[in-house]
Image (cartoon, rainbow, N blue to C red; front, side, top):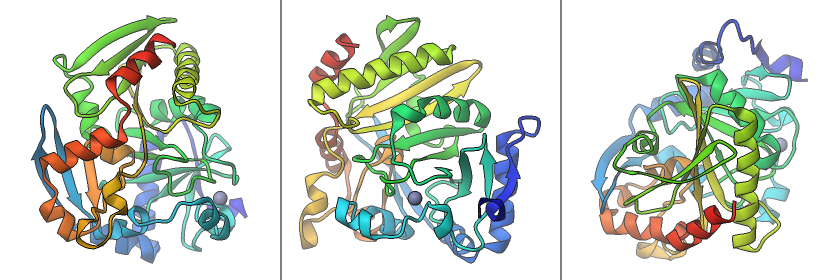
Length: 324
Ligand SMILES: [Zn+2]
């Protein structure tokens, strides 16, 4: 069945970016749902919101109602057909077979103008630690054009039961630019040759890991996750959103440690409800709402409140970094 889906196999000589863009072009001619999704994306509206110390882009994207409004409780997930499993992909969908265990697929409800889902060929649970090595490879193979990102199973993944990453054009998500701003970067520690930094005056906590050596970076990433588990007092994966870039020989992991996935305002009724369900892109500074009502009324204090509420505190992050 996999054979019928493969558009091309990843070929290092060609570049993953070139192959992925060729796939997108093919799907834009042949897959009605994707054609419709990209037509709708052409009409999204965006505006900047200047918050205290940082700014974000708010995007009004009606197609995202499926994701922003999605029920993600265990019972719902168990009953639905997994939309990333090969046997359930639409007949027109094709993918690039990447290193024999992932597929590069086009996302039919794009938030960015080239939006890919990088899905495991098997139905295995969403889990970053088992696949951090793959994430680093993907970031390298997609560089310098794309950034790879991940939403934890308890933190924005719409398929928490099926391992997947996503890719967006580099530097479209504001945190990628903010993470290289000298005024914002705070060096915290160096562990096994990996620089650990945070970002100041940012309205939410971010932890950066930077290194030119993949094995060291993986090792320190695992230590960071262990430290987060201890802080959260859980054996499950901590609530995280993770972005990864590779530029000029350097990997940069940007991790958002989260207190909760959806803010209280998400669960209010009627007029008081705000349909913002922050995952990597949103907490990274490109916040998506599927409702025009929220696009018009969401202001700086609302964003500041939501970011504060869903993020760990500075004190918690200090303890986590000290314990790495
Ligand atoms: Zn699946």
